[in-house]
Image 1 (cartoon, helix red, strand yellow):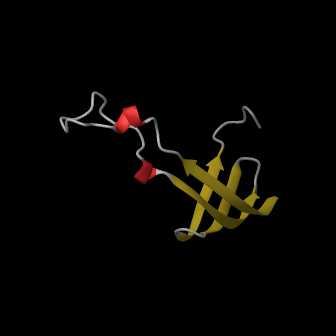
Image 2 (cartoon, one colour; image 1 turned 45 degrees about the vertical axis):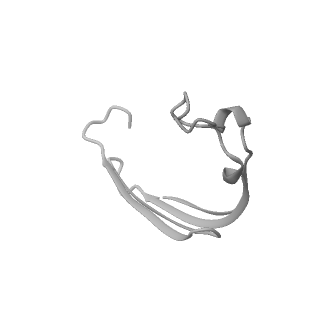
Image 3 (tube, one colour; image 1 turned 60 degrees about the horizontal axis):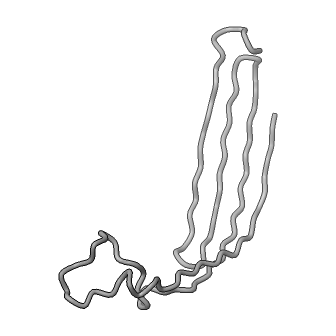
Length: 99
């Protein structure tokens, strides 16, 4: 049997500065030479967020050929809410190579 669990707390920072004015300045209004103009001053941003998460994992091997497992994780983000994700897994070995 294998049991795992844990937790984490994170704080993330993000920033984007305005690009060179030549990358977005368009005096003629006919479009730029590039398909994506540079970041304009209105697009500049400095933001941060924090989140925490907890998880648990359990695996059980009732026989040498069979493994059954499951895991669950909960996360809560300051900027867009929370999330629960999970999985159930299994493996059955049809041969004895690798056992």
